[in-house]
Length: 458
Image 1 (tube, rainbow, N blue to C red):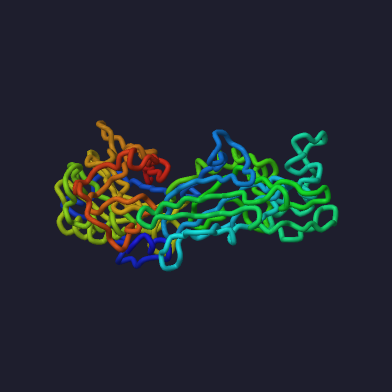
Image 2 (tube, rainbow, N blue to C red):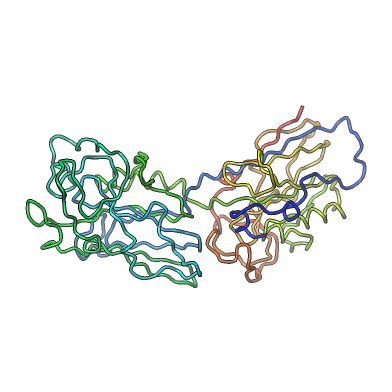
């Protein structure tokens, strides 16, 4: 089962592993020293978009500023087949109008997997942020060119507070109709892509002519395009929702003044890989390395299948049929709390399972980092101590004992971007050992993906 199965539906219980705990080893009778422990694993990833950034300095410039005719911004990123591009930049002569994409963004790949390339200006729209009255562009006292020197502050609030499209003949707040230049006469957006590297470069150009493009009641006025922000997401409406008020997160500052700082500051901590987590496998043990040995190859008992596809059934069966030294009990967890069927763990949800633990026993577990080739979240060889030296049960947050592991069975690609994360399988990893994923390879802390807590069940 690939990560695409995680997103598209729920796999069968057989594919995901057993719902019940499986006992293995001997001596499982009642023990007065045993304690019932509830393990809770939460997907706490806050990420709303995979990537984001700001464009603010023209190609020939050295400091931030708007685009005049002939100027261009450029920015680059990598993206996968399900990703979309959004951006927003002020139409400088307006009160609160901005150039942008549809709220869900522009698909970066075609249905047959070809990366987007060429002129995409026909997918660029002009939007009204709904935050300020609409005056004649470049003429009204609170429009972009004049507001900075206005003595009476910003214009009044728009009677319609919703973000909406600006048509070719918008009706201004005064009731007058204004004839806008065609979008394609003011802005051009080009995309260059490299299918081998999954890299895209976006170029935003001001192609207006200050002598003819924008006709107003005060004569011809110049067209300017402000700095802005961009995001890459799975189609989330990251910047705004059409027909809904601005969210108050910084889009207004772009639309009214061309200032992208506030919106970028909001987007940055919410930018990252919001990976689902697969169902997982656990073991209670009093000897080291029940699931793998760090620095050694995978044992071929099913850890590879879990790491590459999220299917833990083979590993669960192997642990039950032939428990490693020191393993008393093992099992699987696969149904999110409140769910009616097994499935992946999406942000905001949790797995829970109970174990009966004895003094000196430790907990080990492993679960797939969904948008990877063969990475796992899991404990190290020693596992998580469940008791202290005096035999007192240890409870609380134990997330710091969890690491991100590379199982060494498949060549690594960029998380959420590589084409072999799930099926079809990619090339073999030249380093076949199980090892920690270093920060240089993936710098997001484990604590930004999951939280693991232990509580005693009375």
